[in-house]
Length: 135
Image (cartoon, rainbow, N blue to C red; front, top):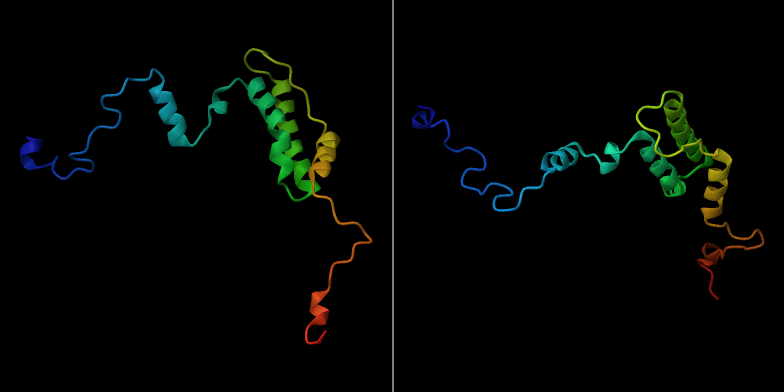
């Protein structure tokens, strides 16, 4: 009936091959498709203590590009708040031990990774003063 009425004519993708046709079916295709569609990473599926431990390990890279010490402290404070919330009401098995991050240690490492300012006795060349003057 519907085909006779033309309900299936000019549908998007008509005449194109089905995606994945002829390829072996992955058991977790639906999970991978969901993560891709929602823009999530596989870390989302980890138990909370493992996910927190990974965040702690990646913290130096996460704060490296921040511009101010205040921003670094905020990122560490947010992570510590998440850790404390989990410690107060742990869910699931406690696979690995997770403790709060030392803010001062992260800030010190962040300062060490910053580019060093030029020495105080270094005077930049002032080429703009020479404009208009003949040597």
